[in-house]
Length: 500
View (cartoon, one colour):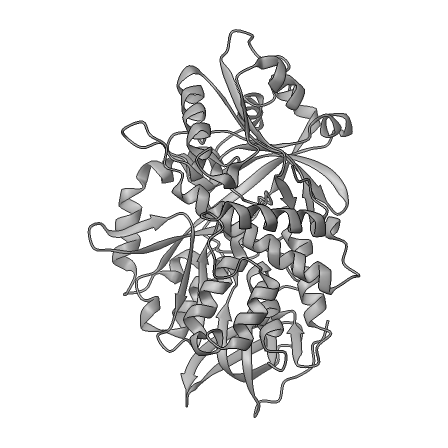
């Protein structure tokens, strides 16, 4: 990819920090909306999408809320709240529309290099959990976004769907499952690299690997960014009108360096993860679904256990996890000093308050770190009763940094989601947080455009282009069944996906 030196006198239109799915999505959107924009991308590693967007580091489900039970919490009165599930399902349909546009535009890209149809299932056992899943299913039927979902308590039916999950299970145990055949598996690493490869053909775009941003400062109406070439040690200063910090776990320290008032009070709580990766081809071949269960009491929502069929580097894979853990690193390739160095006078109160409110979570993470291989196997056996130790090996997953933010009641709260933090003048924005991030990247970036490019966004040219790229733009898919159906039909055809 292009890595030419920048002219320090030149003021760029856009600098993207971090070569992950978020920067790729924003860069691709902006280039379509205004082709003459000058863009430079800086990534501290030697390849795009090597951190949170990488296939082994990312849950990769194509989060559409079909199977993830943490998006449909049961309330104290026993009812199930589906509002977040509807929002995520709608956002994923927006992402699919943009990906469809990119595939139609670039005939060299085969959609199966980054997205494939894979059934999404929820699976539970025990009377109480079965009752919850039944209620969840009934509530989801109120939204057309979940048309096609099938619910079953029939062991024979479930055995046909997921034979390995049912083999060896106590026949007296009450079980239930839901299934959505239009679920997908998305390789966000591959998708990110496709978008960057397309961008680098433009002479106004430069992508620099092994480059680390050391300082950010607003001066004379533009941002001055000091960048270090990690290969040569050379440092230089870039000037730009707009900065996007999409550096995953590395976003918080960079936001702190930018020193915008809107960033005050934000902190981060790192959560590491591991997978069990199946190494037995026969076992891999016999399972074909993403099966999500219920998270253990006290565990973070992002640690919801799942038995996950994936396509990675053109090969079928099977993962189980994630097993959560704790590290003070903000990135997989980060420093053990990341967490302590992120504590500043403006966020120490929210950090301490959130820490005190989440002592059970800290204990849970410590217990996870101390797990033996036998402990991990026992957790797997909840989903695969006949699992054997020799068929699985441990794989390190990505590092996530959950958002801590100021809260008037508690001082600070831990947020499980994503947060866009932007300056009042729209000249800089940062994305903090994790799941369901990648799957909803297009919706997140459209929100960012509303905040940072409001004037351009209101022009007929940008409106028309957005409508071309995302046919449902400006309309609610959750409220318009006809539009939702036509959009799904179109994206299924373009992306070569299952459509009922």
